[in-house]
Length: 599
View 1 (cartoon, rainbow, N blue to C red):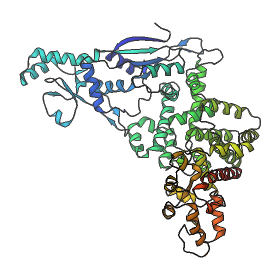
View 2: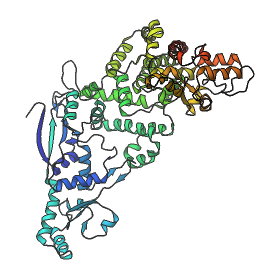
View 3: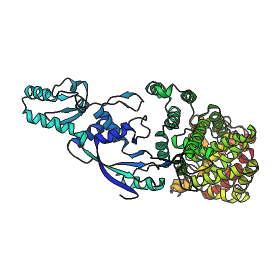
């Protein structure tokens, strides 16, 4: 046996016995079964015909040192093969599974003895005597009088009794077919287990550290780990798909009767898309906040009872880790906490989910919010500091590269700071210094990526500062975003292309973008600024209103300033395009600095 893993074979019946007896724990067993019935049928057919169905992979939890000095042997956690085992449980044992709507359903596999064909059972098949409508009835001893069945079937369909008997035996022998099992050693760390999983999985599916953590949590009975897992899973599910609430409530009666289910139910009525967390987000926030660590691999180790200094595994560490994790999750799903944090996000000007594209930014913002509340910082100071940290993180791309390491670095320093308020101020001033505003940010605005965080933050700043769309008298940037207004080119795309700027990276510079009413953009068409702006100047001097209703110079100047349009824009044509981009980038950077100062 290798210290890393052991490869062996185990029969289907023994494997299912391990699962039923708790020797192998299937993580998140109450989550929906994602295979369709066709895949279940194909799996059974492959076993019947002796085709390989792949390995299952288990990972043995470390043995735990108990308070009395004895050791408790850890369970086997199923790392890969959950869908196959769930399929076997459904087809061979007749157990119900949860479908995608969280409804308990039976998946019955039918077998035609004459053709040796498997199909998903349906009413039409059930009416045809040549089919066994549910093979699970033949998998338990004593359920069916085999001799009588063989005799009746062979007479009815004029088949040789030996053939019928042989095929029934072959069907029943499915439960004795061996499946390959890879048992990963208990001393392997989570990174190694992840790497092994990726290499042996035929599709190269990346198993995240959050998946390991959820698996670890869900199989712990002593400290109610599965309740923690369900709290996380259902909270995230209700936030995204509230219509499934009743189905989940009725299908998981045991959990829905608990107080924690009531405490997460509120999210189903919260039509909110600014921050839609998945289970990884909840784990990351809860763990980083309560454990003051940023690397999820540490969570798996702590839930296993690891002492990082002695490298032993202790029961008291497991108990404390589950206690802290539960507290962190409860803080996350708390309605008051969550709604106040959403309010803070929106108060930055980020009124749409698309405006903050980094979930890591919103995750750490929530961590900071919870930490400041725990340290009894005044509410108005919390709002201000969380706003500033969120925007600073976006502008500096703080959590883009190695986010876990940055989370770990930040939470440790924030927690250790004697004056956390002063620490935040100092960190922000270092990151967003004069050089950043006057040079670094200007350079970063030189991009054609429409999803750029710098362009998104510019729009956020316009929302926060109550700006109007370019050339609009009444329509605000906020209204344009809320009504799915469009981003348009200030120097029209077609105009630039016809004048030699055919490269997408040239005409799609974000410094050439503005939030603009569609009807105004239609009027501009493919005209040069010097052309369409002359019409705007005319309407400001008593001429006909054509572009957005601005009819006086004071309003026009204010509108151009809000949208960071250079003052000499009305004289520009294609020959001035590069100068326009440079000038506008500087103005956009200045506006962002002004905006940040207002937070």
